[in-house]
Structures are given as structure tokens and as C-alpha cells.
Length: 130
Image (cartoon, rainbow, N blue to C red; front, side, top):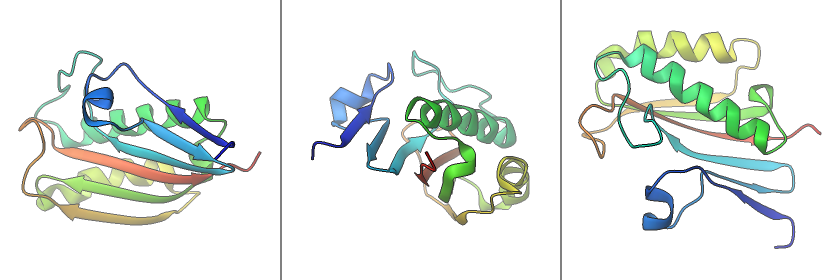
């Protein structure tokens, strides 16, 4: 695929597991699951699901910009949470970011993440409007 472009971060996990931060093929951009971790793999805001969700969206916004798109181009979000009882606080952050866009969205509870301090992971699909 000559029009396939991958985007990486400084995550140690990408080469270890064999994935990209994001992949763009034509106008389609798929952003991998994003957590509130810093470049050293340290989980930020380990008890605050809303703050973690906000950091996830900031990181997603940055890679979308690098790929030639923005949050307004998002057509699908998936939110994985460790405690579905916290859906409202996570959902509020999602609403703040996407209220005008209103992408298709899913939120599901998962049994655990790679690190127990991770409370939310978000992935998105976008179609660049060029």
C-alpha cells in the first residue's frame, strides 16, 4: 500500500508488540488505544478517571494533527474503562471533546489493563477532511 503511513511515539511498547500509534491509509486514520501514560510509561493521575480521559484525548488530538486531521474528523470512538460506575465522569470528558462532532461511540468495562493504575483507554477512527 503506497498510501499507507504509520505514526509512532516514543513508547517502548510499539516495537515490542509490533504496532503503530496511528495508521493512515488514504483519508482513513486509525489511532491505537491511548492511555494516560507519559513517555517513560508512568501512568498519570492514577486515581482520576476524568483526568486520564482528558489526557487520552489530548494525545489522540496530537497524533491526529500529525496525521493531517483533527478531532473534528473523528467518526468512531471506543472507550475501555476499568469501572463502568465511573461512566459519567469519563463520558463528560468525551462530551466536551466531541459534543459538536458526535461520533459513533462505545464504552465498555474491561477486567484489567496492562497497569492497574490505568482507568481508561480510548481509541478512535477518523476520516481526514483534507
